[in-house]
Amino acid sequence: MINSRLNKKRKRKLRGFRVFMLLLVLVLLGGGTYYAYDIFSSAKQASQKIYQKLNGQTAHTDNVQVTKDPFNVLLVGIDSQGGGRGRSDVLMLVTINPQTKEVYEVSIPRDTRLYIPDAGKKTKITSSYSYGGIDTTIGAVNKLLDVPIDYYISTNFQGFEDIVDTLDGVKVDVPFTFKAMLTKSLTWKTYHKGEMYLNGNEALAYVRMRKSDPLGDHGRNVRQQQVIKAVIDKGTSFSSISKIDDVLSDLGDNVKTNIPPSKFASFVRLYSQIKDTKINSLKIDGQDELINEAYYYIPDQDSIDKIHSTLLRTLEKVLSATILTPIPTTAARITNNAKSFANLIWQSFFSILK
Figure 1: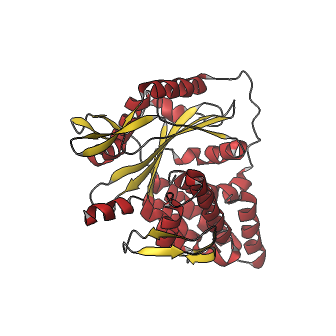
Figure 2: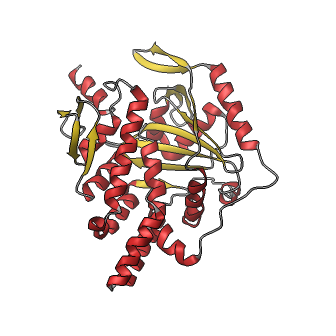
Figure 3: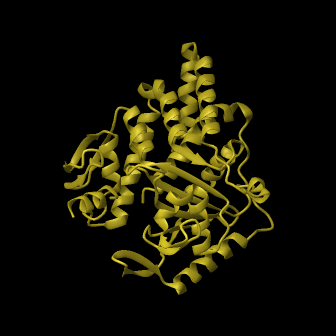
């Protein structure tokens, strides 16, 4: 019983201009040209390391023009603390239509029950990753919502901790006093109202806590945004610029995606266009049910059908004319996009912590 409770507890804008100015200062100080090239080179190596094409990836996915074509991206948070391949502990499907500037997100309950072919039985969708990796997880989400999935971005919680630790921790303003269990030591830590300095493991518990927050998911979202800003501010400060290589290395070691490195610049461009767009959250209605001494989430079919229709309509909407932001010059892309791809992955990572 104790182990069960412990296991349950365990489940609980890099701004391109600013980067450009930092690099420009280095150039003016001397030796900066080499350093800028080193950052660009590190970003390129990391982006190549995280690229993992799906089995049977279609030409359609390769040909998606993300600044014009509607598409889906599945954000997957992998919990591998129990050993083995791990579980898809967090699943969020994001649908984006660049032309209509519509963005929808669907958070899929980890205990959702459905048939997993690789398991040969009905089980929790969180188990899909353990049976066949990302391909099986994508297949499960596709089966549930019946919409095409063009891209995925997966990361593990270790990646988050590593990046925060690489920056020697972050400072946050805790909104109220609460306790949360640390995943490594399985001990309780008290977060006191006011400013606190957190290491990676402490920051992870800070952004994942929900039940003790009077604002629930909204409160957690606010804390996640707070940590994003803290990491970005510190990561782009002059004192941290020598650690950029290590941060990029952390991303390369802990993130996987089938987004080709050649498309990162387009994703950054898209992000700048829709960053202020309202994200419409779609909730999968259903109920918990005890089956064979295990609790499952049984989704309501009417709710699934409505979500399917909404996402499909969004994917099918195409405007006759689209006004796009001018593409930056090659010189600007070298300074901006060498690190902007890290911002894209970083923003996605925090999204899947929800």
